[in-house]
Each structure stands twice: as C-alpha cells, then as structure tokens.
Image 1 (cartoon, rainbow, N blue to C red):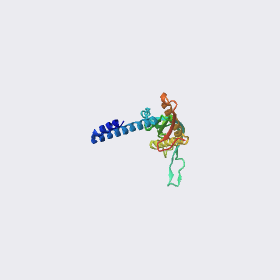
Image 2 (image 1 turned 120 degrees about the horizontal axis):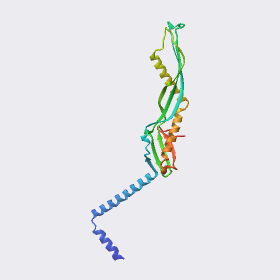
Image 3 (image 1 turned 90 degrees about the horizontal axis):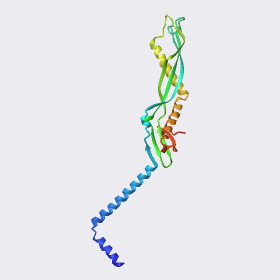
Image 4 (image 1 turned 90 degrees about the vertical axis):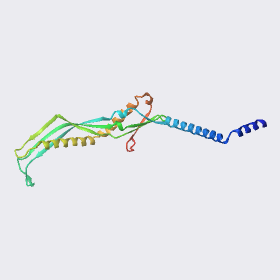
Length: 215
C-alpha cells in the first residue's frame, strides 16, 4: 500500500505546476458550463414566449354597435341679438343610422406560456373606437322647413353630420361597446390559443398593457 501511495505522489510531482493550473481551470470552466446549461433548461421548462400568429391579425373589429341619431338643425335671423325675428327660421329634423366599430390591435398582443403550471398569460391593449360609419340610405326626414330669409347651407349640414357621428360614438361608449369588445377579443384569443392541442388544457389569464390585471 505504501509503495502505491509513493508511486501516486511521485507521478503527481512529475506534472508541471503550469499544467496543473490549466487542468484546474478547465475543470472549473466545465463545471460552470454545465451549471449554466442546467439552469437554462429549468427556466425554459417553466416559462417561454409563444408565437401564435396573433401579431399578424392587426387591427381587428371585435364589437359593432348600430345607432340611430336624430339631428335638429335651426337657422334664423335675429334683431341685434335681442330676439329672433318671426318667420325667418329654417329648420331641418332628420336622422341617420350610424355603425360604430370597436377594435383591438392584435399586433400588440404577447403571450407567455408556463408549461409547469399549464398557464398562458396574455398581455393585450384595451379596445378602442375604430370608426363611425354613417349609412346614407338610412336618411329619414321629419321636418324640412326653409325660410327665404335664412337657409341651412352645405357647410352647416356637414357639421351637423359630424355632430351626429360624435354623438353616436358617445352613446356607444355609454352603452358598453368597449367592454363588450374587450370580452369578445379575449374569447377570440383563447379560441386561437386552444386550436393548438398542446394548450388545450391550459388556463388563459389576461393582463392589459399598463398593468391592469383581469378581475
């Protein structure tokens, strides 16, 4: 036994000190490399960003509201801003049907999949009003009275239509069009995600851009 130990010591003593240092450094690098690989593999098994193609959808209308707006336009002469002169009033009362579209920008949506907990967290923007479209064929005229002394010109008529569109947008907001658009967007996203059989049983949670978490 003593002879064996003496042989090992003599063999170790024959290795130059510089070579010993190189061997130690190589071993340390190998240990660090293995540690990094193992830590990365653990992280990837827990969470990862998924590409589900939602960014290719772009701006998507997820809710549409249909409203009828009545406009009452008047024009008359007055006496030095003191009172209206009788029989000088022109008046138009009419309505249009206006379609309000609310949309979500799907290009801003991102998803993180947590394979360990079988959960996908979706980050998305709130819905916004996309456009208001007036249907010219829906015009209904209730009163069209014109005086020789005053008239409603095309500029005033155009401004009246703009006012109607703005009113339609306000009414649509008040009736919850944006909330409905948000709800429909989440349904579409979840359906899109679960088209992939891998995520069929995953729970989908939502967080709005800006930090608001779904209640």
